[in-house]
Amino acid sequence: MNEAVDCILREAIPSDAEAILELLNETAIQTDFMTLGPEGIHLSVEEEMKQLDLIYDSLNNVVFVASVNDKIIGVASINASTEPKVAHIGEVGIVLNENYWGMGLGSLMMEELLLWAEDTDILSRLELKVQERNSRARYLYEKLGFKLEAVMERGVKDGEKLLNVCLMSKLI
Ligand SMILES: CC(C)(COP(=O)(O)OP(=O)(O)OC[C@H]1O[C@@H](n2cnc3c(N)ncnc32)[C@H](O)[C@@H]1OP(=O)(O)O)[C@@H](O)C(=O)NCCC(=O)NCCS
Image (cartoon, rainbow, N blue to C red; front, side, top):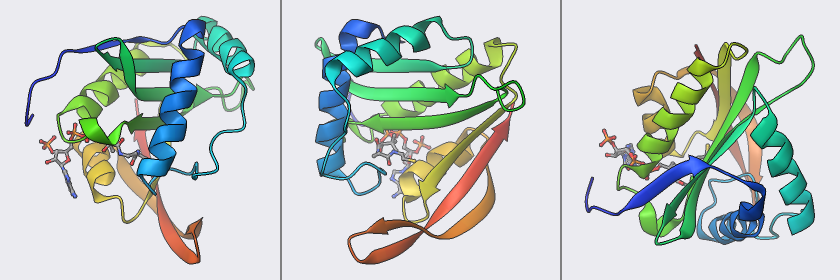
């Protein structure tokens, strides 16, 4: 960790909806590594509140938020289906405000997600997609046991550039 920050990590609740949307819209401008672009997220605060409410009660979905001085600066999530045949698969997502990169917070959040996932009786496979050029995120996932399964050629478009995307997974 380069510098110490007092960061609180906890499960998201519906009243976090507005701050989470703000973070996602802010980080979509800061980095090209997200699927969300500068156009921002098409979800109202009310819709996000409803989703967070459902997720809070779900056994195979979770959203964690990281906050510093009461401001949400990071979100990490597992998104899974209710369909029995695929309910054991959780899709992992993580993003931090750029001002907080490189402090170890991404690792902490991922570790927390993994502990949560291991505690469920449902999830047995975590998967994620990450741009091939996103070496920091790929390093982090490999460090925590994710394996490369495939490279999806032209898996994402950034402006006129067609970029490869890595499909990674971890069995738990
Ligand atoms: C990816 C992200 C969550 C990582 O969080 P973070 O807090 O910056 O990561 P950490 O500080 O915990 O760890 C980064 C590790 O990567 C290493 N690292 C940093 N830059 C790197 C690079 N360019 N290549 C490889 N490794 C790198 C660090 O040395 C550190 O290693 P260590 O844990 O062995 O000390 C964060 O940078 C982010 O939100 N990025 C933008 C959104 C994004 O890319 N999300 C993932 C989409 S799939």
